[in-house]
Length: 469
Ligand code: SAH
Image (tube, rainbow, N blue to C red):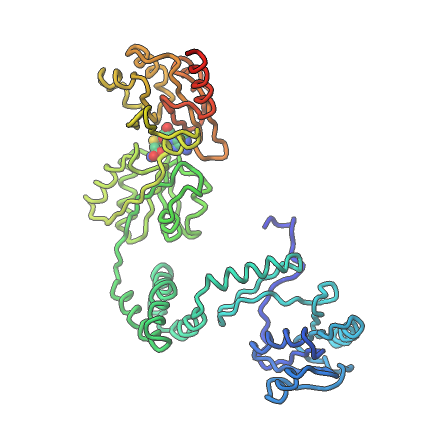
């Protein structure tokens, strides 16, 4: 929340009411609803109602509250932690509010935000885990919806897990602070605890904690691990769920220049971010240095995410990094990502392949095309060929020359997609003839989609062709 622009009128706190007095005035539906909520607390509950409903009488009889069958009078609110005006009668509630204020007790009048000193939030109760939801009276329906969502999300046994876990905290303090302790508790709350409860109930939790602690203690020099992860072309919503989870667990994130700030934002707050940008105007990091870095951090026993733009296996020097990790004996795993070429095709609304047009598609880098054999150019120059060309801006003129020389039509579409999936994405329709001029004005990373026109353009070309026949 930007400081200064929005400020809370109501500051949320958790008030200790153990053994303290909470006063409720009124004995009808509004009072009953509040009483049900207040019974969840350890407070002493006192009700003032001249004409209480049968439920209230029954609760009084059962000793759950103290009932005075008369209106609240001066002196009754003194020392009370909270006072609820629930008479559902404006004049009576206002009178109660005055007494409460005179006697320094916090007052809430049911359904009257303006005259209340505090409001009661919607509550999700997994005591000792309690979620309070408030909208400052702006959107009670929304508060209820959020409550319903959380009720579904939070395991009904979370409270039990937490109580048993709390009693074990001292024992778990033998684990060093930080990562180790966090891992232990995460394993308990996320996996082992709920599983043990489902199988053996509450009494299974303590032995589970003991076993788990044993395991985490003996695993003293836990191995580091390097996950090589594809970040996709930039839009955080195009990350895989795996990438998202690994970022959330990472100690160190070593990332390319192509990875967007929005994605780095998702790394665990405590994670160290290391940039190994290779292009652009910043200092470039040689591949040997990157290899050295990932090995060094992997050997340090931490969880490393080596985050690469797009898919790690597409022009990502993936094999060199894997070889370095293997040579050093560091454990590694690979999580693919969406490659920018595929997402560029989506941006122009075309399939990378299409029945009757192209049954294959090439992934090419403009860098290596100087070493292209003549037969490669010849086949690429055929009608209907499609290629996603990476790093093709600098070699655009060279590509154009070779393809034309091998018989490609000058009007073959080449669509430039710059900053794929980012807020500044641009789709620039061009042809083989206009390609060098078109790329001149493209500062960001770009994919050249050879043989693909944006859908709208492609359709009008087809229409023209048909009209000409
Ligand atoms: N592994 C990456 C490619 C790395 S090579 C992938 O799978 O996408 C770097 C080249 O990829 C850039 O020169 C550019 O051609 C292309 N590229 C990467 N991200 C891009 C993006 N968001 N928009 C356009 N092109 C991108």
